[in-house]
Length: 373
Image 1: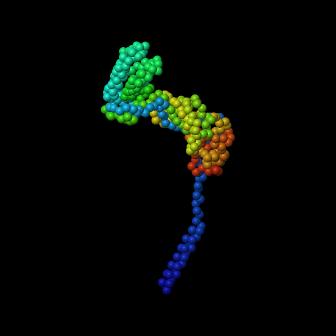
Image 2: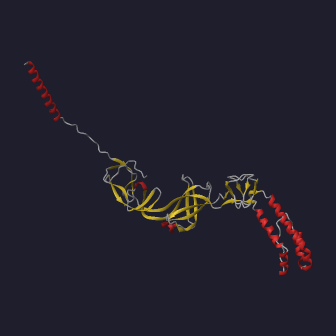
Image 3: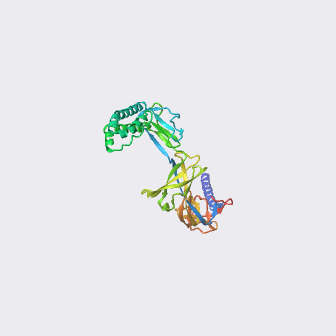
């Protein structure tokens, strides 16, 4: 009996505990969660439409306007000159750049000169007998003949009979053989056609030079050209003589150049026209990469904004009563980092910096340190 009473009390106690727990859970008041709505702070600018000059930006590498690739037209061993044929060596106009040993060739030239002198000497008795009036001029020619100097032009013939006589004795052929060798002898010494500097050297002293071999490159470092490709839609803006602004990549130095040539053909693949700009000045080097700004027309009643503000290439965020809104704009010109747009009203509050997660209807707060990007 006692055991039964204990079991009944235990069941009653357990049931009471369950009901009490259910009652407490049901009547428990959940604390209200206070969530503050996040409002992002944004930077803005006020739209003020004006005339904006359109500047076509492009880039290119400098190439010396006056440049030559040096090739050998004769064969021989490279000799020393007053300066070493090395990169960076400068030469004045007319100064010897390359000297190739010509001893063997020079000896052959002297032999040909001697042969010419001999054949003229051999006909002198015949000239005295058959052409007495022409003897004096041929005698004067022989007296002035110097094998160490460039040969003089043959005396003029005064009749066909004399001309045929001179030609038949091989004098004319011998004369032009000598002139040909004299011209070729000059090719053993390559002289600077203008004041410049060696930018490439492919041979050293003692090297055996072969005919047709490339020896190096020589440029004038005072005047350069840069070729740029401009969209064909701006071809009417290109004019020979137009000033162009050029600057280095760091934008720390600026030069003014001029358009000197414009290609008359549009590239079929890129639909661009190539223009050539001449520039000179200090701190310019062959192969240097420059940015070019070509002044185009001015767009009236327009506004310039950063490219990264455009949405779908045709919309911009504005702010009305602390709410973001999207408006359509007309893009009239694109630069590398900015775009020129039309369709915004003066006084419109425009978002000046992108906001992550921005959307139409988003609540925002204008920064107290608001400034234009």
